[in-house]
Image 1 (cartoon, helix red, strand yellow):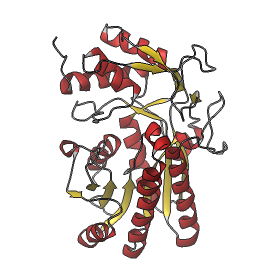
Image 2 (cartoon, rainbow, N blue to C red):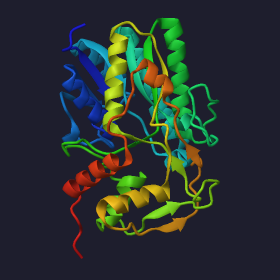
Image 3 (tube, helix red, strand yellow):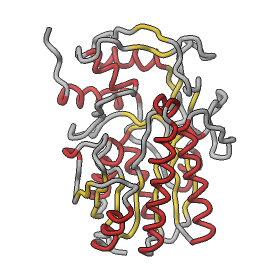
Image 4 (cartoon, rainbow, N blue to C red):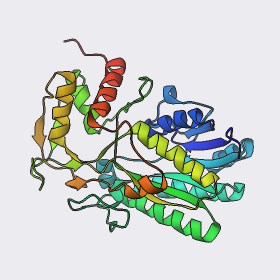
Length: 331
């Protein structure tokens, strides 16, 4: 398979998808970005852009007809945990039905390789141990449930149709491109690190910590933070394994270490020299207390060894991006 192979990247204008496109280009592939730009950024796009919805099978089929697509990287999804609790229909329609439409068009076109963007949210209310892939999946929000349904679909498609499929369960994506070209930029930002930095810059007046009564050492929720560039590299590795005939599988992408909300805020203060002002609000529905990966299987199969995911590098790259993109608000 030529390294100039075209790779369809659904959601390629989004935060993680855009980083993956740049990793593909660096590895010699040609990303074809498919995105409806509902949350993605046109400025992030690397390669040809098709503006269309995942449920539009006519538009999808046209892309496969116009390009010799060797594989798909599937990032396109609705992904806000809180929203999924109040509008689950959107999540099952966009994520599950959208993926079914994509898989149908792929089968018709004879494309049998997909790298799927899954999530640690499939595990649900986990205990305090780092989670292996065989830990019971009992998602507690519609977002995690929709992703787990897709994983099951891909398992069945692998068995029935010979689809090569990697499901990569990543935990809290964070950080920004080392060149400062792309980072987290959403109209409705919900992630901890960018919201804290927006608060420091004066762009967010009401920064809150949601819950300080969890069963954790300092009462705030603990998460495993993984640099977005390390995630992008893992996707390219998975793609190349599929190209070589690997059947795929399910793998966690995380560091195996967890940090609480308060620890993240302390790290941001250490890096920026400024304390993040915050107030405590009640827990959000659907948020588990503890979510940390056991990445040993990915280490073995994907040779996954994050090189950018230490907390200072994550914070430093994110802060550089925010300073460039959201200058300090003068009052």
